[in-house]
Image 1 (cartoon, rainbow, N blue to C red):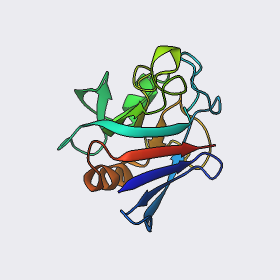
Image 2 (cartoon, rainbow, N blue to C red; image 1 turned 60 degrees about the vertical axis):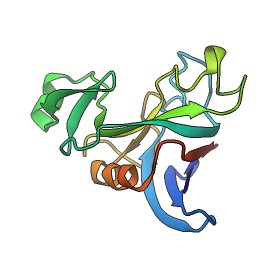
Image 3 (cartoon, rainbow, N blue to C red; image 1 turned 180 degrees about the vertical axis):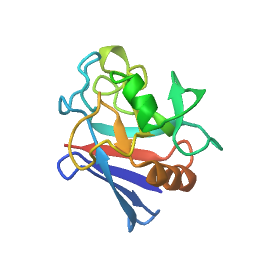
Length: 159
């Protein structure tokens, strides 16, 4: 398996071992565009791997903070109560860069920037940039992708 993320088309494609498309999903990448620098709130480019899968067995719309479930389930009312919260829901695929000096180590390290593929509220507009650098997905799609891949799967993010 391999994952390709295309920033221009705002899509994530799951490929099988011979490169054939298995599934394509709408995403939302960084509102600030692409970039690797810590604090930029941009989506990092290049070759990555899934470092960790977080959230196995959590219910749909489970809220995660710092990679831990809070026991909250996202609802529009909860969203209204915390309007400035960056909602990370359902599952997390934590990315680690593979290119030293570009997206790994130092001030450009994807993993230390806590860049994930994760679920997002249904009200989040997909198909256009809007995140703080992560890749946001519909929650049902996130569960499907999460269940289809293992830690160590390659992820390439193309501008």
